[in-house]
Image 1 (tube, one colour):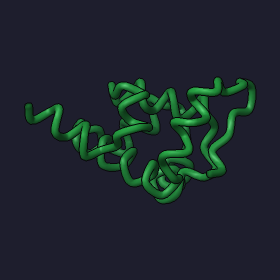
Image 2 (cartoon, one colour):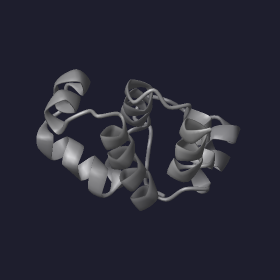
Image 3 (cartoon, one colour):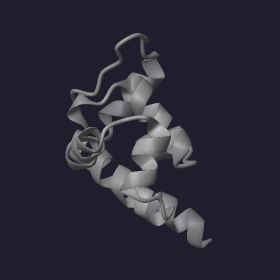
Image 4 (cartoon, rainbow, N blue to C red):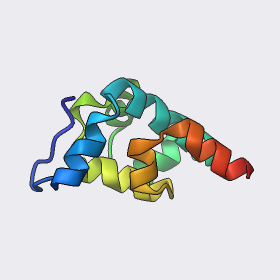
Length: 98
């Protein structure tokens, strides 16, 4: 997986968790969670302070997203980071329903 940290060293546990998911799954989940939360593209780019092209590229294939930006998006979408990486969208949706 090519998600990387520009300024942070990932802990051993974080590296192991990241191996469980690939960049396409992460991208798909970011888009689905944004939509599930009712956040428009326009609102997300404003709040995250990124361009529309950047957001759309992250939602297509998250291979170039930094660790910091990914964590910023996860926090913005109000999702538990460990659950996001280890369980993914299906688990998040089940928790929402339950």
